[in-house]
View 1 (cartoon, rainbow, N blue to C red):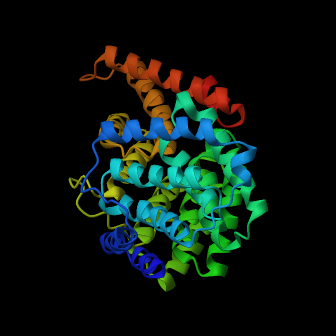
View 2: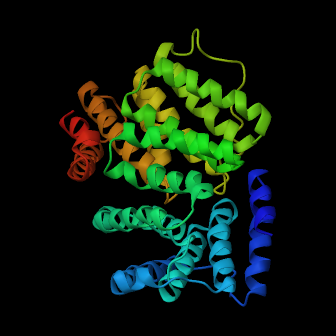
Length: 368
């Protein structure tokens, strides 16, 4: 059943993967709610963080989870959390991840514990608890030394370097390790997670200031592989990045291709691709000198942002601030100077907080 859910997920059948995991968890005696209120999810996160602080110590690390039923339950909670990203609310994702972490904290450590902890920090990390969550994530990664976790490397690297470490570690380090996750994923048959690592490697490299021509070559290599692995969502996602890179190089005059991304209904709240598309359109507009268009798409992106997209939100705050400054300089009509100044102040505040965690990544943006 676990393999079936992974295959369904890879094929883009998130709902079927979710139902498969849900069926197994119900058979194991777990409770699967129809929905979870945001307030309940917030309380669950707070309780889980408190439980971690109380339980995590040397004594807990010496306790091994050996019950096969509990081990299976933990695996399926991690799997259903990933599947629910595509077909359920953010609160449901948080619910399943918190359940898996609490299960491990109550019963001891096993080879599936690190992934549960990394999933947890990936969804709950905010500015006010970033240091704590980074410590939890580092502790989780250190558990690799105790177990044979080679098959989990792609997802571990995706969770740590793609969703957590970018706040603290140089973008270049994150991109390099995400590429290792991609290579390991393909070599072990975990193509879905390997390609997720590839997308995050492109994203991190783009915002690290890497060579655009080298990034374009890397993107085309991934697109070539996707003709074999056939993942429509992955393909469209990478095409979005490709179009941005070509605009930054030469506005697409000599580097564009005929294939265009198929992002579906941009008015559909469940369409995860639309958030990224609006963000990329804002960035393209900024570097092309289209100030009004950049403002339109940046505000559109900020209004519908998926809660997990903290990396892109941070980059968008930076561009929104720069663009608001351009509006003030150009004295464009139809824009509120009060609103633009507020956006500029917010951008500076966000960059200051980010630079407090990583001078390497954000100090230059704060100075700019």
